[in-house]
Length: 201
Image (tube, rainbow, N blue to C red; front, side, top):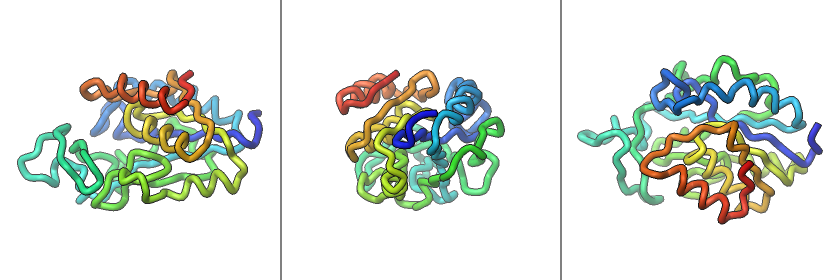
């Protein structure tokens, strides 16, 4: 068992990010058994869950004439317009059926504000609106986090960068992540994480 100061954060292992889903990440389901095995070694396990209303402004469908994966400017910066995914209460928003959700003590839902997307487990995409995860981890005495899940170049990377910015020691276990890799986004995310002191294993 890892020391109580270390936590495992499992990012968005949901049906819509797995093969057959609305925003499928190649091989997204392959990592589930090993994530389950990893959970047993941590006293603190947190799951994050994308939880969008149907009218979310990050959905291309909500911008007439806009193509999925095109970019727009939002008040908080550039935003990818995604296919509608992880809509609240739908099967796509549910955790992958193979994921051992019973092992988690906390589920953080994110992206439920219609006007702002939320990749990170710690903050909305304005980088200032908190999810509450930082306070939970600090109250548990956690100083180091290991991140796994989907997708490496978006929600995992944003979470890792925010965790590092907040002063946590951060490990991204790359073999238990899968990437979207949109126009070189994986290489860019890896470089940014390394520059921030994130350990990629």
